[in-house]
Length: 185
Image 1 (tube, helix red, strand yellow):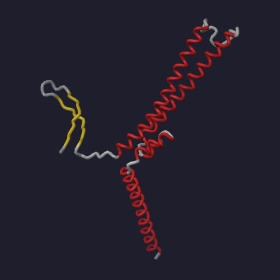
Image 2 (cartoon, one colour; image 1 turned 90 degrees about the horizontal axis):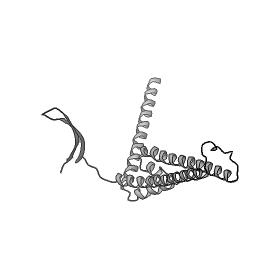
Image 3 (cartoon, one colour; image 1 turned 180 degrees about the vertical axis):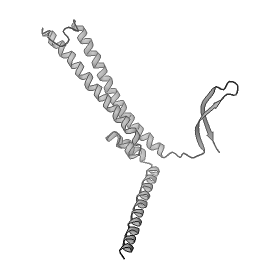
Image 4 (cartoon, helix red, strand yellow; image 1 turned 120 degrees about the vertical axis):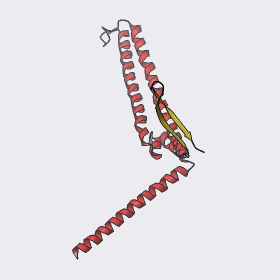
């Protein structure tokens, strides 16, 4: 009797878990189809990426681009902070020398005040460049989310295929590499 109850409960448990898995797969397929057919998907993805960088890529399920986005933003923010600190260091040394105090960190390295101004301008230019990189990567993030969502809706069939091509010549057996493009009508 106990063995029969055990088998009955195990069969019910198996059927219940199988139905839940089928329901989850069904919901994922419905969500994906809705995402593909919705004409506002690209604008939503761009808006989400504009609000929080990488959120549009999560919305379109292109997770592999998120580390590149945050890596680029982090590196440009790091260089902004570094160049700002260096520029302020040169500026403080210049102000200190104008007051007549020559006990700054550049006393033995830099002799003239003009060189301190050049160093300050050098780091200021690279600080401004890091701001441009940050804004550019942010805008590329929004553009990538928009284009990625548009490409989700693009119909790719098996009629078009691209394969690598590797062969040897018959005369001297040198390898020939290329790309084979097939288009079937």
